[in-house]
Length: 239
Length: 239
DNA sequence: GAGTGGTCTAGACCACACA
DNA sequence: GTGTGGTCTAGACCACTCT
Image (cartoon, rainbow over all chains, first blue to last red):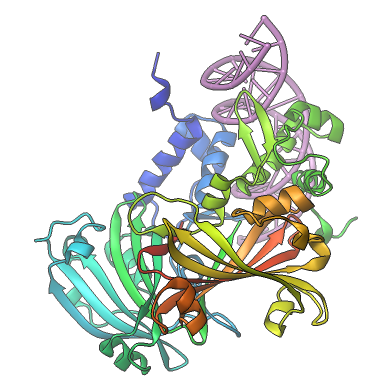
């Protein structure tokens, strides 16, 4: 008699086994999974149970299913990131991905406020990236990205840091950003923020603190974005 | 041969029929629905198809299912509203619902910025509620709520306007708030905001503009909240 | 035409709630 | 014990994609 606490439905167990294959790189982004019947046969469950696991993973944006074609591992390309993780939109007009300019890349130790959410020691090494992001040449965001060096070896040897860093994390280190939590506050622009955003010191800015996690829900990236919201807003839909 | 465009899966049609019963009050909040087999028999579909419709409605927070007990229409009680629509949380400590004090209730006509999202004419009548909300006696939010008079007849005859207005909308007018969209910006506290929030004029505030919709996705309520985010933050989880 | 996911059905058994 | 939702299975047919 197994305890009720430890019980997991079969489809959840199947889901866990499939996620493990995403984590270990058996099925890299873009790859087609075997068909439902092949998976069912291999995992010794019915096709309906495999489907329930695949549907759950699809609703978490880990997979993409196309009728008639197959089931594919999600690729962290721009349009997906834009939709899933980037919530700043122009007040009017179409949504676009901002251009970015790196100000500084340094190797340092985390502050207490950085170490705690990233589950790191104060003596651990981290990369700190500072960059400005712009819509149509107008600077909108100043942001600081903090990454543990242990998971991003050789970051400083890259020629450039691309606009879409989540695609980089995936391609260079095989790290998939699967979920994140954001905390928003209103703050005043510091002299430094103001100079980068070309706005008066003391201008109200939207501060977004994001903690991003990988497929196994381990914290991977901490990001502090200060945003000028004169022409853009942060959009949320609640169901 | 029917056109592919007009096609809707059977479970989606079932879902639409069930939602109609929520809208017309056949099944009010808190009521138990018939069992899956009874619904299947009545609607002439299989129990599995009914289940798919019920699961979809459950994931939209319209229904609550309890193993062994039954399926129930969601009640807009505090804890649910807190979880579903209220995203301001103390930086540390437990989540609570703020107290509120109504400053003013007036009947007026909408501004252009109010009329458009509510799909109203500029000459329509609207209620405008202004109130302050506090955590532990500290004022945190000043907000303005705009409601079309046609859908909320007699609002001015109420003795008091309760803290949880969505519960009021449901009980008094049978209107269920099922979804909403929020836009966030950082602004400076006006003299008026500052006096209510007991903060300096010019203090950075988080402005939340919310458009709330009913079960049929019709806009119902427009709300502008100005929030002091020194000790609280707006939390978002992204999957 | 062959292969894929999408829908629909039917039935079995389990876990839980309540009287 | 009875009735509910939760899980699991098996099979059928449809719509779509690619060759």
